[in-house]
Amino acid sequence: MNAFFASVEQQANPELQGKPIAVVGGHGRTVITTSSYEARAKGVKTGMAVWEGKRACPELIIVVGDNKKYTYTSTRINEIFRDYTPEVEAFSIDESWLDVTHSLSIFGSAVSIAYLIKARIRHSFGITCSIGIAPNKLLAKLASDMQKPDGLTIITPEDVSRTLERLPIGDLCGVGKKMQKHLNMLSIYTCGELGRCEEERLTRKFGIIGKRLKEMGQGIDNSPVIQFGEEDDVKSVGHSSTLERDLSDPVEIRRFLLRLAEMVGSRARRYNVSGKTIHLYVRYADFYSSWGKQTTLKSHTNQSDDIYRAALGILHTVELEQPVRLLGISLSNLKHQDEQLPLFVEDRKKLEATKAMDAVNARFGDMVVTYGSLLPGKEQSGSHVIPPSWRPDGIKNVDVK
DNA sequence: TCTGGGGTCCTAGGACCC
DNA sequence: TCTGGGGTCCTAGGACCC
Image (cartoon, rainbow, N blue to C red; front, side, top):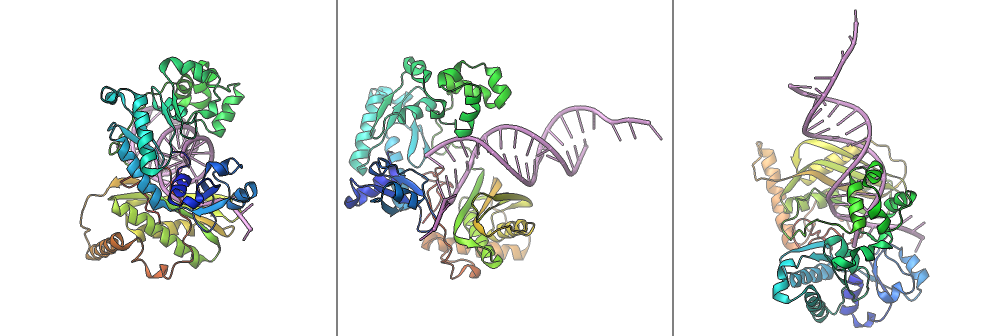
């Protein structure tokens, strides 16, 4: 989708149409997640702080994002995709791959499918998208970025080498700033040069991904489109949040930690996974210094208080050097939780209580019932931004309000 | 009144076991 | 009077994606 969140907002509120708007994650310390093309024309970019955006574009309209709108729209759009092929892989909330190899005989061609999809998305949601058609995922993603907004770009097998010859390596999905710099030091600037580089030279410098890099330079990508439900099991579940103000008070820090532990635990329980490793992440007031530590328990858990205690245990091994700007907890080393009753009565009771609490919250909203120490608990809600790993269903459907 | 949040994958080094 | 090798698990840190 083009400028997805901003487009959805402009569609929902006609007063915003044709104007420079920026969607932000929350009211506190937040950044611009998406801006409209009108705002981009003035230099507003994703990741900017609000004041930076306003400096670039004084008439910029700030809209606090409404994630429900975006997840709903994204889910519906992916349903449209599945009318044309079951092989749909969501890459993020606003990008998907479709393998239409087996649909061509029904719909004629990839191009005709692309036009049908564009028309339906515009008709149903009033927004535009850019589509890339190519022999594989790497090239399709590349093609989709070539014309915006409302683009349609085709890279045929015959076009591949001509397209890649002078393309900067940084345009490839998977080559970030650091990798680009390292490749530049080897005098590699274009995909053409990357594709011609000796594999041995690349593996010597980059190890196992050297081979993959050369292939990318040649436009080779054999990775399949993984359709919904066929994805690998999720490997970690976590939440982190920048606090509305930096915290030094241990009581307040613990309170926020408990909140995070409950967010992580309830999500793990909802999707029936439990984990053995708890990771605590702290970012200090100066923004740049931070640390993360993890600990592994003797057995798997998805109970919020276990997670909280583990995180607290890590915190107690550290002397905080500065006030805390951000706290994060994640749970990994996951396995699917098979239903089994704990041995001891106390543990069974705890499980029952947790279940009852989760059931109420499932019906009336997250944290409607929660730990007493989290009440009244409004002052540090943090901001909520949709992560790109979001999926229409399952555990990656992060419940953000 | 500065700078979000959720993930995955890879590397490297150490502990531990047989 | 010197001491192997294979494997797993754990921790920490960094790059990358949107």
